[in-house]
Image (tube, rainbow, N blue to C red; front, side, top):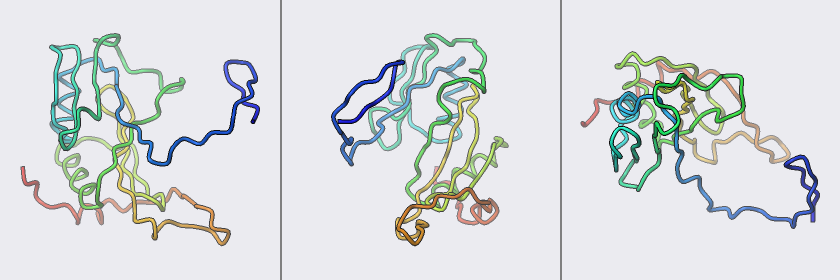
Length: 178
């Protein structure tokens, strides 16, 4: 048993570790303009539309999954972005299978003149950062092979935030097959 604090109270909880194969299945984002959001997520990033509910909601995915991202205007139609300095989601991270796939995504962003807010080599991954049209943070990344991850002498993971050479990454991009 361990003492856990939440909701302004202490609770005794049994020790528990979430199963190792647990994954975050999808994210559902509030957007102010569904067509504009679909233009970004479908048109630039390349997600496929799975289902759309008129002008209020859409579900998009990669590879035929039921949905990786839900977009809706139920509480946010025509609204501005959430305040930057408030509690909430920092970003949605989209994991690409390979460095080449991340390079193709970067090329599409460059071709669309879509602004990045940052880029980094984290030792375990390489990442691009940007905001979607509604100001929702988006991270596009690929994980390096585990044998390339940085560990210290004690075997502890040592993630970093270092410069990512975007020109070098772009060299891996090839013409889109679409």
